[in-house]
Length: 293
Length: 115
Image 1 (tube, chains in turn green, orange):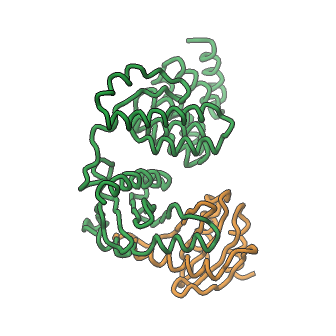
Image 2: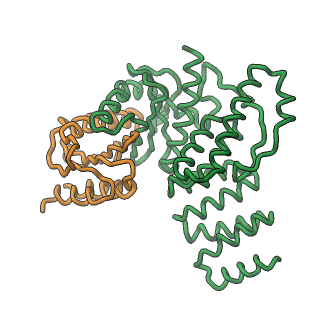
Image 3: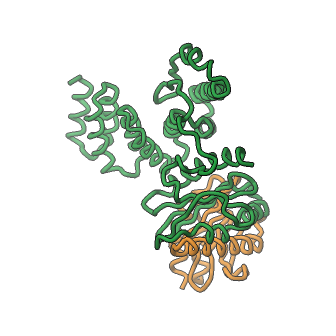
């Protein structure tokens, strides 16, 4: 055991209620002792569930372990507690980039840049993601260039928490007939036109019945009404509507000016996460609409 | 101070809240209001009341219970709404830097006390 870890362990043993667990877990992570780091971080989180730093740290550790879903959840928790937390925004951007969703990665990096305009690493990461995004688009249109471009890609160190590996575009492009097929819980997403007609997706009611068409009809005009309310009250363009029911969370977002997307989840999923789900589904819906129109 | 005034007072004390009002959900008429200059209470009541009504029907259409809280987020702020008993709705207009989490808690608590 190294001196610093011994010292931090002693400090935490003397003051189990202190924040020393943050330093100790980070020291263990840096040394690659990931199992021990997880245990220390979990112990800290049980005492400080509202501490964004602890969720951020847990996300780093899980990411190092290769548990990317767990890392995403932990960074989302950090963002729920601190929406402008640049470390979590960068972390989620990294995960989106790995998943081949450059648009979402850029969105999160731009939010990070707004939160901390002086952080040069964010600007560098943004430039890197935009460059890689363009390269991916070129590879998609010219497959023969893939091998050469991948081989000349340089390791990157600016996009913390991890370097970005150059990856292929998603292996399973969304089918035109089922835009949400590749998304988790794609059966709780509904894309509706301005007249209340279902364009895509399904929705199952609490009793198990299909309720997509009925809900779509109620959503007719909601986008126009939301736009009018936001404009008349001087709030600019509307971005989302979150609806908390005692037994469900709903999020509405406008993929385009003429459509509205509804994402719904059980209340066990924090609303901020449902917003992330809806944002991602809206991007998928936009791409799908471009293809089918 | 009446219950409605107390409710509005608690909500408008939250940082970033530009105003709050209580309106009739059915017809959008203002029952009580505490608004900063420049916030159109009648427009907020009518538009938010109508929108909340649609969202209540949407939730019911999905076989779920009516919403307890709604947030319309826009570029430069949000409209928050908490349906109350007696077909009323508590509405707040907040700026982009508002403490929405605290405003939400105050509104939910205030809405539950408006009997």
